[in-house]
Amino acid sequence: MRINEVLAEIDEVCKQCDKPKPLVICVSKTYPCSAIEEAYSYGMRDFGENKVQELMQKMQEIDLPIKWHLIGHLQTNKVKYIIGKVALIHSIDSLKLLNEVEIQAKKHNVTADVLLQINVAKEQSKSGFYEEEIEDVLAYVTTLRNVRVKGLMMIAPFVEDPQENAVYFAKLHEIYVDIQKQNLDNISMEILSSGMSNDFKVAIEEGSNCVRIGTAIFGSRNY
Ligand SMILES: *Cc1c(COP(=O)(O)O)cnc(C)c1O
Image (cartoon, rainbow, N blue to C red; front, top):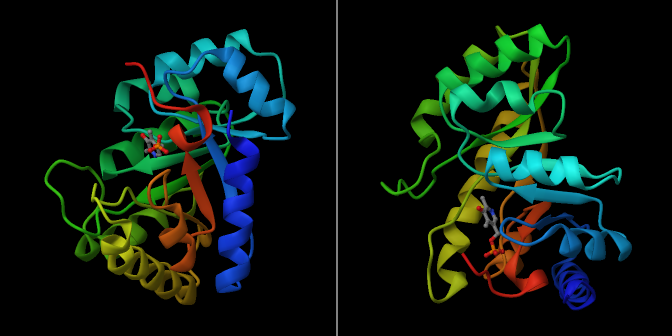
């Protein structure tokens, strides 16, 4: 478990670029519950999973006040299982999914906090809204009653040198600030979720306030 090393690296970056400390989400997908409990014992409270079934199993097995984050692509038919149980859904990538979250949240009499996933680099292999779609998505969100958009999320392209992604992190931050200024109903820009094991430093430098880190903390994954 390299949690203390990772937290120290994050502190160092924040000091260097004079940014506040981001929320650190431990991405526990594929790792056993014992790894989550160990990270919890180091003071970590936010954990991210990318599959609904694995998330539900871990929620059942672990009896700790953890804030769970759904960070992977979410199928519409699985929304009903996680509404009211997760702190935040990071991966809203279609209007259909937004609509289903609204329906299920209403049914459970809760307000669902979500992030909009943005595909800044327009990668075919990734989901998320393109920049030019955002205006319509925001207009739709303002009509919803049981969904609150809390910010944006991005998965940056996989590159050898994370510095190459600085432009995408910066662009995402620019979009975030622009939406913040609009003061729309149901929409507040509080969480900018970007940066993973290989690129969290650049992400923080460019304005991320929420990093999702798996392998740097838990070691390489065994799929
Ligand atoms: C797996 C995953 C991460 C963490 O990736 P690491 O490279 O292990 O830090 C972050 N975000 C999402 C959406 C993921 O699926």
